[in-house]
Amino acid sequence: AQTVTQSQPEMSVQEAETVTLSCTYDTSESDYYLFWYKQPPSRQMILVIRQEAYKQQNATENRFSVNFQKAAKSFSLKISDSQLGDAAMYFCAYRSVEASGYALNFGKGTSLLVTP
Amino acid sequence: GAGVSQSPSNKVTEKGKDVELRCDPISGHTALYWYRQSLGQGLEFLIYFQGNSAPDKSGLPSDRFSAERTGGSVSTLTIQRTQQEDSAVYLCASSLEGGPWGPQHFGDGTRLSIL
Image (cartoon, rainbow over all chains, first blue to last red; front, side):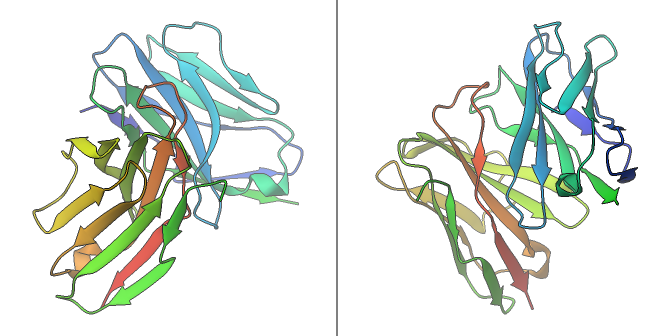
C-alpha cells in the first residue's frame, strides 16, 4: 500500500503571508492522482486542489498551488495571502489508478494556525 | 439535500452494544466510501460501494464491522459488540463515478464514543 507522509504536524502563518505544507509519498506506480483536502472544525473534508501525476504542470486554484516533484515523490501545498478562514487541518491524499474503487490514501495531516 | 448527509452527528454508547451509522450520498452518485478518522491516526479507508455491491472491503478492521447499501443510495455501517478502540469519527464520501479523478464529496461525519 502507498504511504503518504506529512512531516509537519503543526504549522503557523500570519495573515496575508505565504505558507507551504509538505507531503511525500511512496509508490511504485507511474500514474496516480494526488489531492489536498482541508478539514475545518466542522469535520467536513473539502477538496482544495488535485494533481494528475502524468501532468508536469503544477495545479493552481486561486490562492492555492502545488509544487509537484514526481521524481522526488513530493507534493507540497502553497497557500498565498493566508486568511483566517484557511485555519484547518490539511490532508494530503494519494489515489491509485490501479486499485479497485480508487479509495483515497491519506497522510496524518497538518494543523494550520493563522494568526492576525 | 445538496451534500452528503450522515446521521447521527454524534453517538455515545456502551462497550458491547451494536451501533448503526447512516450515510445518504449526493443524489446520482454511484460510488460511496466509508473512512474512519481516529485521533492522531489520520483517515483510514474502510469500504467502497459501487452501486449496491462492495467490490472492496479490504479496510474493514474486523468481522464486527459490516456495511450495506440499498437502492444504490443510502448506506449503513454497522459495528457489532463495540469496543473502546472503535471510538472515532466515521466519514462517508460519495463521488459521481468510481473513477480516480472525480472528487469525493464528504459528509460531516459521525463522532462515535464508546464508554
